[in-house]
Length: 300
Image (cartoon, rainbow, N blue to C red; front, side, top):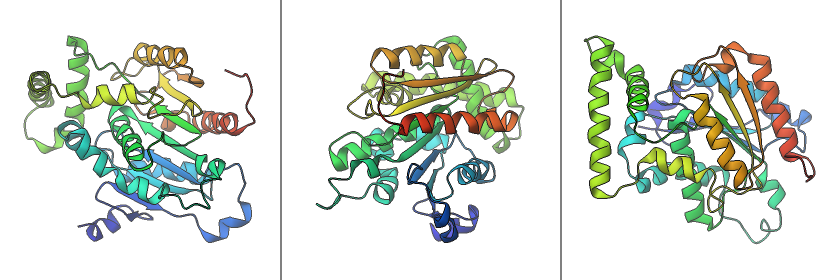
């Protein structure tokens, strides 16, 4: 099955049906900079396709040509219907590839281990990222070391209000509308019904919803070290995740001692900031990475 996926994501090799890796080109060693990340982890939005994700991977290749890249695909069905244990197991290939068990010689080199940049897109990307944090905790019994976490169009509220139900069902319908012959509104209505039923079931059996776990994990020092800087990239015109939800999360993170940079765009939709504001987008990431890897200071 993994071999069949090889041509599905040109330039990347499959580690599983969800996780793909691309190693740097040997000729780029001449331009290797000691402050660049040794690895960039990219977590797709729900049902994102390789043809779109490659644009982000190539953007990071331009910024950091010597970084190993991991791209994690995000089928919405897996994110929403799998338990934490299943999601965690699905993310083990990320840990095994980028954070293998340390030898005694490696234990005194945390700065090298830390040089990792993680980029999550939308709430579904956040769900898989949180599962990665949990996988690292289970393997290494400490928070996952990395310098920067980029939160692109995430996180949104996890409270099921009427407004959020409309947004969530629309997001799921956008990824599955092509599966069905009927109008988009019918697909959205079916997803709304499913989401209500699923949330009720989770409440009855006492299961924590995947989005709820992920939103908390990224500002929980048990999983996300406070040495990690956050960059929130979002838009006041996002029709799926309101900017107010993201700014509320920023405030909570700051209260808990996390340092962040916040970059709000105007005019771009959900996970569309890079397409509309390419130079500004990558410039914000470069600036935050430089801040994250500079000498410690009192800078907020």
